[in-house]
Image (cartoon, rainbow, N blue to C red; front, side):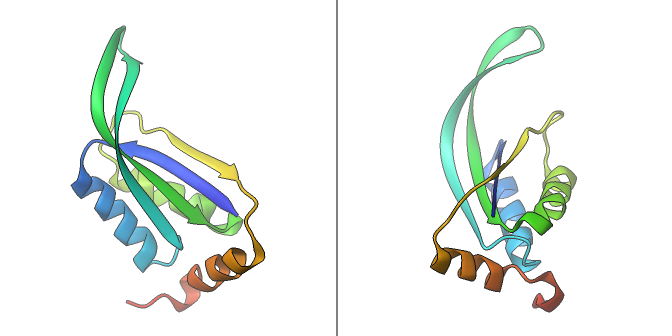
Length: 106
C-alpha cells in the first residue's frame, strides 16, 4: 500500500483533489487536516495555513494519484510524498476493493 501526501492552500482545492481521487477509485480514503506550515520560499521564511491531504491507495495507482494532484494543484512547486506502508489484512482488503478504477462509478 502507498500513503501519499501533499499540502494545498485552501479547502476547495483539497476537496476537489479528494473527491476526484475517490470518484475515480484511485484512492480508498483521503484525510484532510488544517495545519500551519513554516517553510523557506524564495529566500525568505513563510508561515501559512494549509490543508494536508493524506491519501491511501495501492502501489499500482501511485502514478495516477500523483498525476491528478499535479493537474489540480495550484502551487508553483507542489510537494507530493509517496511512502510504502504496511497495514492490517482487513484494511488491505478494503483498500483493494475500493481502488478498482476499471469498475469506477461515473
